[in-house]
Image (tube, rainbow, N blue to C red; front, top):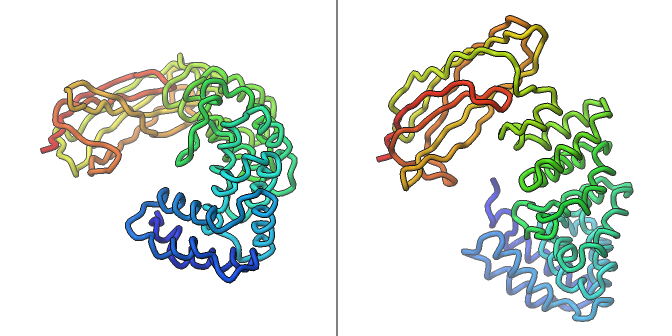
Length: 362
């Protein structure tokens, strides 16, 4: 993954300062140029904030003059990429006073580098007024703008401010998803899936209800949108999501396993287990097979995490066998603790077998 320096380097910011000075017909952009030399040690978010504030210092305070400079900069095709991200954020500050013109400028900036984070202050300030503009973007000829409509309204967009109003009630933005779920661009459709997945975390039944509206469309593209959008619910064994996708929680199977081959595992090693699933029903069945690791916490309790194994169609009487090596190498997002852990096999959201193993985290 690129580092903060690689995404928003001193050279990138210096180049931005030159382009803004040219657009403003000024000798230079002093605050932005100074900022370019003061980025060492800053993470990406802090860099964006610092450059945003420098841009706000260098550009005019009044909206019409500010917008004129940015639009002049947009005439340069090389005004693009990561240098535009803090400019988007500056528009989110200055443009709130103009609102619709501010959103219009973000619409024109987003093809240079997504303005998905910068539209969110508008949605937080006045959701209804902002959505009236955003919904029009779903008909835009540019896929970057159409994606902005979906990505910018995601309730829990990573690395961006959350939208508390849409977390509490995502329904006002659902018409955006209805308009885009069959978009011709995979880039747009993937955003719709991720937005639906955001909804599923707080309102699972609404996510399933929304996906069900799309299921009468039998194109492969829509099927992929639905499956990816309901992925969290599938892993969690949500009955409505499983049933919608043809994975009956009550499917007739017999399961052997998980059979643990490494009953004692040290951090840095692998848990190894095998499994066997036989379909005993009279008709072919679609099976979603996952495994669940119950990690020991610092207080001795366990917390589960679901991992993907496979999705397979089995004929009556057919048996699927497999094995998995699960890594316990150190990762930054999880701290391991010694003790008795548990691994479970899950078929169509139902736990069908389990086995214990010990982890040595010393």
